[in-house]
Length: 437
Ligand code: XUL
Ligand code: CO
Image (cartoon, rainbow, N blue to C red; front, side, top):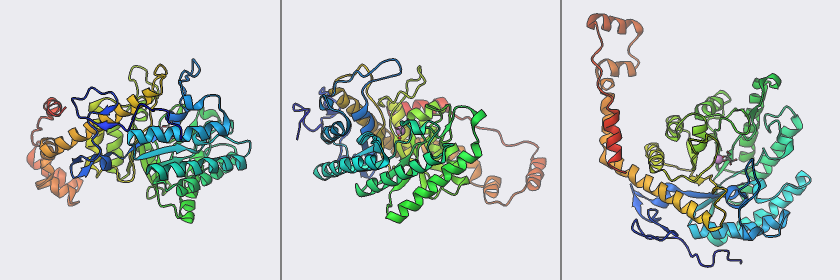
């Protein structure tokens, strides 16, 4: 087996004082935090698409990345060569999971049949590497956006045969995901949206998208795939409006079409900010609906505003993510999946290590800080006491469904004015959080 990083062995935990850039300062896999190991809480996952297929190209320029395993190869040969390189990186990082799109592990064939055969060829290599390393598949997904046939969308295309092709593609990827023991399957609506409403029958497109997802759920049952389905919100890019635009829009869609029992949300930080929300907001929306599934961990650049998919290094961000995750019972089937890419100027293979080590350490710190905030209890106590008026008296009576507009009017006419409001103490709480950082 080729060894592309002969001088690098498995990245070890050396503690916060270490100056070794190839060591974890905070991610200590087996360390117990709030009753579980860090590995069990964080369920880290590395993505195939950015790690192996990201070449540094952008809208203004071509590839820049140096990737020795790609040298001189193309097509299926290139796809085959990338598999051991990917698993070498994943294994040396101590990643328990990975995620892929069908068309980033194997190329598009000339026909669906050829694409399927190529995917099978690569899936056999993935399986062998999974068995060798013990790394598991967090989720699989179909790439339903790059090929020209998907220009109008896949499940929401105006072209019914494109819908049919997409269905066949997802059927195959579900089979492969199942065969690889995948723990989930994600739908991100690449081009499921519109560029102009002048040519769009929105209601019909949404009906088709729901039909598509129901077919996927039915087929999963048929083949005995018990993994969790996810839908990944994103408001725009490449379309101007995507139907899965944010967590609330996804939940509304899933409820309307009776899909909520079958799908949870896979939330991505940069998608949240594109939607004008924080990741914490998106996680709260999903968590309070019992639909917090998985996390595509990355970050955007607030000055650019694009989906730049940078590695997360902001400890406030990771603390917020882990506080919310812990509040809703943790990432049960999902994980912290680094849907992130190195910058175009970070051209060396070793930059892939710096990026992932930084992201894993940032989340490990976020987890420890979040656990400490929860153990301290002052934040939760404050929030609880802020709602104390709902624990007894008229508040408890409203929550129990015992009051009406009439009874409440009677009460307020008697009282003349509501009880005085208390301070929200935002600055006090911001200072309190900083005590832990
Ligand atoms: C696109 C994106 C995708 C999904 C999977 O912005 O995040 O890579 O995560 O299709
Ligand atoms: Co993503």
